Amino acid sequence: MKFRSLKYLTLEGLKNIWVNRLMSIASIGVLVACMVLMGAAILFSLNVDKALGSLQDQNVVMVYIKDGITEEETKQAYQDVKKLANVKEAVFIPREEGVDSLLKDMGDQYKDLFAWVDEDQSGSFLPDGIRVSFTDLTKYDDSIKQIKAVKNIENINSSRELTMQIIGMRKMITIAGAWIIGLLMITALVIIANTIKITMHNRKLEISIMKAVGATDNFIRFPFIVEGMVLGLISALVTSGLLYLAYEMTVKQITKVMTLEAIPYSSVFWGILGLFCLIGVATGCIGSVISIGKYLRKEGSEFRAF
Amino acid sequence: MFVVGASGAGKSTFIKLIMHEETPNTGEVIVNGYKMSQIRRKDIPYLRRTMGIVFQDFRVIPTMNVFDNVAFTLRAVGASTREIRRKVSHALSMVGLGAKARSFPTELSGGEQQRVGLARALVNNPSLIIADEPTGNVDPNMSYEIVELLTEINRRGTTVVMVTHEHQLVRDFNRRVIMLEGGTVVADNSEGAV
Image (tube, rainbow over all chains, first blue to last red; front, side):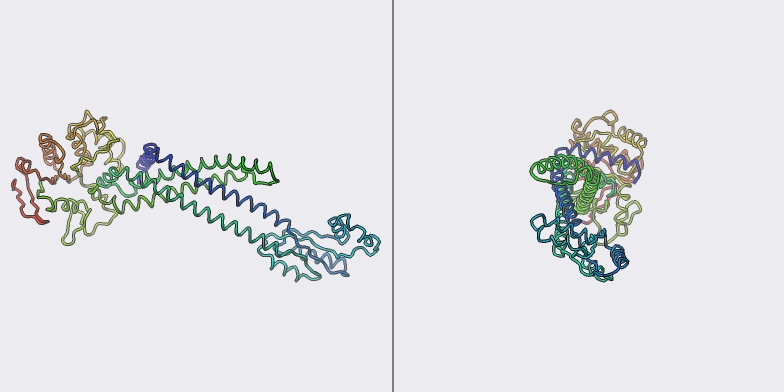
């Protein structure tokens, strides 16, 4: 197709949006509603994921080193654990610090019970330990096995069940989010396809003449694709603005009644805008191609029967 | 050339075969060098560019003015703006609508609308014009004007195939006449009216 044809057809596509403005507004409205739901699902998933992520970060494993080994051997055990692939952070906790921390956690109530610790000259009843956090919790079991295999490791104090629950929840939220987004994308596709179908029926006469004078299918198709893509793009821009307002207001209201460390919209603005533009343009393009393709193969092929 | 026949005689099928809207079960249709049995789907638009079609119901686009209606054909084939301007002006002056280039179809009579259709059919210099009952929706006087225009186009070297059931017109314009009946050519008189 020649450049001047592309220019003419692009302008035709834009003109169609204006000529069928009521239909265009209706389509944008429905698409925006669809995308707002999609955006809400994304933002909700991101926030829950962030909350679970921080819970996951707090979920550390205590690794205890054997008692009665040399300082050199203790250091080596610590270094070996630290070097393991999935270890995000490994902090060495000397036995004295471990006991202090434990006493602090238990509070003054049980202070008398552990009074002997201070009197015990040998130090502490706890061995030296390493506080370990993992990069990828899905490799939890393997990582525990690897730590156990390190020389001079006495035992590991882990909360496997909680970890698995967090992994399960994150997975569930990801899957649910993907389903919601997928279903809403299909809805958006159907909306665009229907709009284009109606536009095509309105322009049956032009299409029949185009076919009669020797316009190629691509020439006929192009303005409809432009129309679909622009409708998608406008919807994406409107949605991003609306979502920003709605999100800020919702977060403000929630933080009034509870502590919430929500993701700032500014951090996801460009990502969401880009995603919506992509979804809008892609659904617009695919929806138009489907509708016009079907039409050209059926009714549109018989220009004399118009 | 006139193609005549009663309803159901096969006139429309004949046009459909020429335009490659239908393919024959047997035999071969060759139009402007294109063999219909061998033509690929992507080549059909190029076949249609070698011909112009005039419809009974004019088929002018009401939202476009006369100039744009005629220019439509050239835009579909990717002509330049200069070429469009030159060819459309020429086609409109040929059909006597040079002064109405900016008018909209609703401001024109039926005969004028059909002349827009005629200008649109000949603007791309086709070697064949198919007129499908072009006088069916216009008054008798205008019918004669339209056929006279088609005769003039034919005189300039373009083949014109006109499907009609107006016997008086056929008699008055002494041209080749093909008569169809039940899908068969029952008469072909290249000398004049059947």
